[in-house]
Amino acid sequence: MALVPEIQLNEDYEKERGKPMPSCNHGIVQTNLIVVLSAACRDRFSVVSELSLATEPPSTPDVSVCNLRQPDWLHDELRVSEAPLNVIEIVSPSQSINEFIPRIESYFRFGVQSAWLVQPPLKQVVVFTPNMEAQVYSEGEVVDPALDVGIALDKIFT
Image 1 (cartoon, helix red, strand yellow):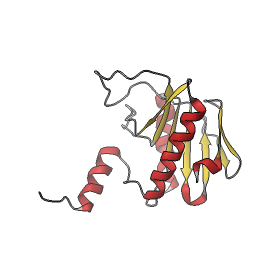
Image 2 (cartoon, rainbow, N blue to C red):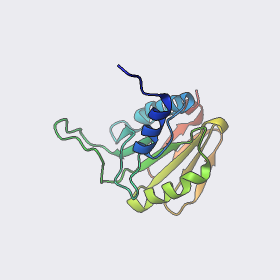
Image 3 (tube, rainbow, N blue to C red):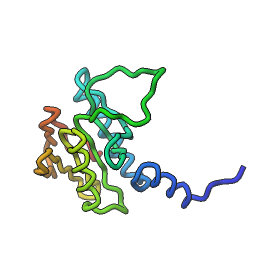
Image 4 (cartoon, rainbow, N blue to C red):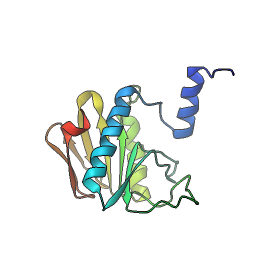
């Protein structure tokens, strides 16, 4: 069996998802977000990793928080046309913040109600609302107005 070079794997991942392959810190933060959001949103919302959205252009946020729904195990969706309430993007080492503004704007056009931009090196979360107002959190609790939930920042970056 021939091994696929790492460069090819990165290119395939980037082409499929429209973003670079995540780093170790990115994966840790993503897991932490899923765990703490799932606990905070239990019985109210579904927390989903890598949900492909029918945005224009198509996108795959790192984490999405959707209206509570039961999975249909027989009829899966490859690209979801219903907007999640919230999306979360985690900045990878090779990305710049400016790359995310058009993506966040497209999420709001799609119907998303809040978007988080998580910056692991700064241990910072920026929460955007549809009018593109941003609230920056560097300590304490990240508050999301669309979800009516607060998450301790130290739980994200542990």
